[in-house]
Structures are given as structure tokens and as C-alpha cells.
Length: 283
Ligand SMILES: [Fe+2]
Ligand SMILES: [Fe+2]
Image (tube, rainbow, N blue to C red):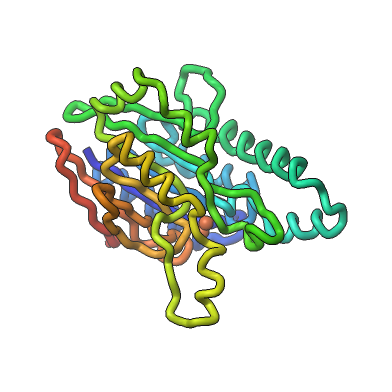
């Protein structure tokens, strides 16, 4: 089975016709190449605008991709945090951290409800992170385990809203033995927006800021991926097309559709669990 993986669309309204045409071209290509499933690993919107989610939903529907079996989306920091708004609100009211956390949780809920059909399918359960999607393909059973790694904006700890964390509630959601034994029968793929890898820059002045983009508890997340026997983790956030291996897990950074609309990642998984990943350029 074949998975197409895109990330960081950063859609910014309907006026950027070029970007919307690029999205049509991309979804067309994904259909033409016979991909069984599409993953979009966050930052669908550029400024946390649900109007941008609507654009993505419409385009997926237009190309017959808006189905539980066909597409999985997760949220990125740009879907949940509008930096200007956060700062304006903070400066004006200086709200309590608990209040901001509550507002943030509401935003996650909005995202999950908006893409409900892709998260719960038909079963009507309340859509929330983490979620598990198990899809039976003729050759193999695939389990997507999807996490929210977006961490709320805090003036000192997350000044750009770009730092990530997979919170304890999500990490502890995978303790049930029946779930673990179901996952053991599947090829498990982890999904989160943030990178395991800390992307450094060569410039010393920039290095001081590397932490503002990082996944704070990347080791805990890696440990969980190992327990779940995840073979691959698909992510985005740092706009670079790259794959890298940590222990037995292959991480794939799906780059940025916004910056490079003609490239995506393709993962092909065989019935015996062997897989290969490559980056594909549209023709
Ligand atoms: Fe991004
Ligand atoms: Fe991001």
C-alpha cells in the first residue's frame, strides 16, 4: 500500500490563487499515482484560521479524498496559535495560564470536530487526540497513531508558539493491553507535527533560538513509539524534506507544501512489513 505525505500547507485565504491551483495539482497527482492514503501533518492554515481548514476540506472533497479511509490530518502550531492575537490578548489582559490552557484546549477541540469524519469515521465517538485509525488493506493492516504535539503559547517557555510537547495524558492513553495487542498485528505509523530531530543552524546567534522550535519531550515520545512498535513517524513543522532514523524508528519530515508545492513524500509498505520511502517531485 502507498501513503502520500504532505505537510505545512500554510494556506492563507482564497486570494492566493496560485497556491490553490498548486493544491489541486498535488491532489490530482496523488490520485494519479494510486496512493491509498494521504497524511497531512499539520500547519494546514497559516494564521490559525478555520477558513483555511475549509479550503483544505473542499479541495479534498473535490478530489474524492475526504474520507476516513483516504486521508488523515493532524494539527500544527499554525492551526492553533495566532501569535499576534496571543500577544495582543496577553498584553491587554494578562490572563491566567489555566485560562489560556482552557482556550487552547477549545481550539484543539475545534480542529478535531472540524475534521471529525477523518478522525472517527462513522462511529460518532468524540474526536480527540490521541486517536488511532486502523485500516485493513488487502495486503496489510495499517494503524495510524496520531498525536497533538502543539504546546500552548507561553511568554517565557514558548515565546514563538512553535515549541512542541506530547502531553502526559496522550502518552498515557496507550496502556490498555487489548489496544497494544491489536497494534501488534499492524504496521504502526506515528503522526505528530513536531520533529524528533533538533534542527540546528550553523549561525551561533540562531542556535540560541533552536529550542523555540523543538519537541520538548522528544525522548518520551520516542519511547512510546518504541513501545507501540511504530516503524515510521511522519511529521512536519521544520520546513525541510528529510528522513532520518532514530533507534528502530524512521522519521520522515514532509517538508513544506507552502515553500515547495511540487514535492511530497511517498511511503510504500509491502505485505511483509518491508517499506521504502522517497521524496517525489511532481512532473
Ligand atoms: Fe509550518
Ligand atoms: Fe509548525
